[in-house]
Length: 114
Length: 114
Image 1 (cartoon, rainbow over the protein chains, first blue to last red):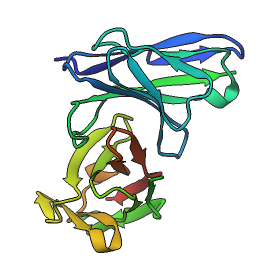
Image 2 (cartoon, rainbow over the protein chains, first blue to last red; image 1 turned 90 degrees about the vertical axis):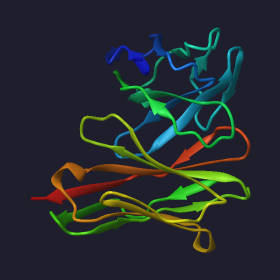
Image 3 (cartoon, rainbow over the protein chains, first blue to last red; image 1 turned 30 degrees about the vertical axis):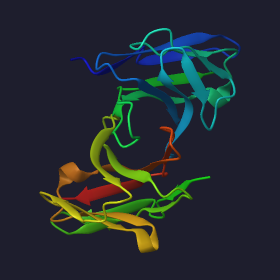
Image 4 (cartoon, chains in turn blue, green; image 1 turned 135 degrees about the vertical axis):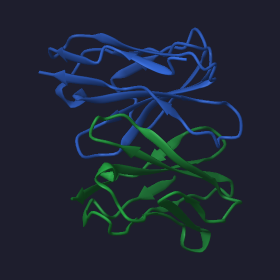
């Protein structure tokens, strides 16, 4: 299994540009998440999904959108990129039941907005 | 609202010393889950341990041990005989509330000096 994969690994955007961060998992996990990690900080939840077609906001959703059309994929869309969105973005997935399952993380996407 | 506090921002120890990383959490839920993750300099997030709120037994895994105390809302992590490879940022995380919303602490950066 590849686990959780993310593309691209690095990206530089200009202010106002848009892009989609891709995330895929092959573990048949129902739950998927997007986090951002700012320098020297912990992870903050942007959006999460409990299954195909179901998404919900996390702690810092402004400026982002997500969709979940399949179990495997959970892309994150940045519209009108701003310097405040410079961060490392992590996608994660977990089993669905009980809330007690660990999250498996992708390798991250380092995004710089200038 | 839930909260995870890792008051130690950075810790430096000399190799072979023992070190304890503190984690204090807040939640109103009676059912919740606590986690520790390791983030080495390479950047990926590695799951270390999961604990549910009904299991206060301490756990030992090799040089790692965890002390969960509901009375003080703490879930501390001890590394015995630290090694240079233990140098990383360690995150404590909490899941509660019925959905898999995760709250991460801000992390403790551990530096083990040879």
